[in-house]
Image (cartoon, rainbow, N blue to C red; front, side, top):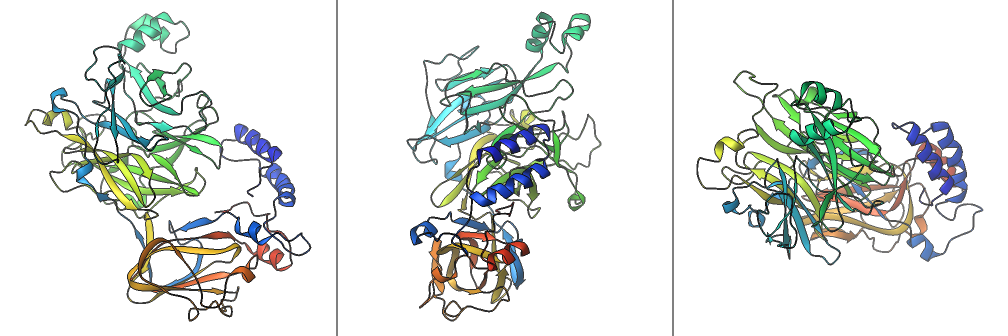
Length: 552
């Protein structure tokens, strides 16, 4: 599955263009058979044996505890959602003299390791200001006096103004158009009205000419940047449709599984649900498909979903779902309930298309009153360092819809960019419900003898054993033979046994059994391939198992 067959990739791309919801299964299975002949996993049966170095070079992957789908049995085990830790020392506020907010702050690291970012000082107009940091904690203005945005230059670090609204920065690893950084925005009002009057082909031309300006006249635009400082409106960057008018913010990411860009949008203006759409070139987009809306588990109070920034993480994707709590004892006085708080729930995906919501509890909980983020937390950036995950958010001290009313109460700033940190791989983990806990994986085949665990056992212990399909421990690889992980905390702790190695167990149907107490287990890492029954039978018969479609 890891070798690249040009014909297979091309055929899949063609079928995905004609069928956005998936590939043509008949063509895929036909070509997958050819792929299986070219992409074997190891020295099985009559196939030529690979060297030990070749076996060790197999790709090691993490088994993250998004769920327990890779386990056949568990006892006394609790699946726990992690929670980001607020870092108040990293909060950044817009200079008070400018009377602005911090809207959609976006952070990234340059190739030289320098931390950089931009944010808007308001929702509309969308005025971008550049910031920088040596460590991602202490932030300062990044002045660019040579850049003169449209209209007035509001500060030395003011680098761009869009007469309209925008979103957070999206990173495009393909950058076929030369712009690795993009922002999806929207314009309305006089600028759209005048454009419609001049252009007979404009979708609003007939109404503009016959009836004048209308509140619903809007159109979408895309901003592009090569360096995060110099921004421009891209020609051909309209991402809307004549029959669909979504409300920003809009985020996008690149799915390496689909080889497509994916946009997270809403079904329409004021519609608080989340949709998914895809594009090969960031110009032509598939129709929106509903991804999330409140479901039967969300019956505790009225809520809606604003958007969901998505970030590639290890083999999958993590989504940070903005949950708007708009329950109100007052009657609805407008199109919908407009006031309330906002926090964050966790979602994840194995393939970049099908997402699952996590524990239905806050992943980033609101901060204590009156900290920034006590009323709204809206994450926009996720950065992975060597040992932690950093999540930067737009944070407010007042609820959604109340921001303007509260500005005159006092001189304190009402919004900021805030930081939450999380242990690497700490989105979800497992722990014991009491003393010893035990769990057993589904069958898999190993392609490398190295196996590690991310586990915090500073005050507890974790042991491992390798079994056959019938859960019978293999000689020398039992719990009693295991060198226990205890009294330590580490991201890549080797799993070892006293007198045995895993070299003799490669490319055989195996299970891994784990027992632990007073410890948190965050992930397991090795070069493994989980099997179906057909794969097990073929592996036992010395055949390749590359018929498997899913390697997650």
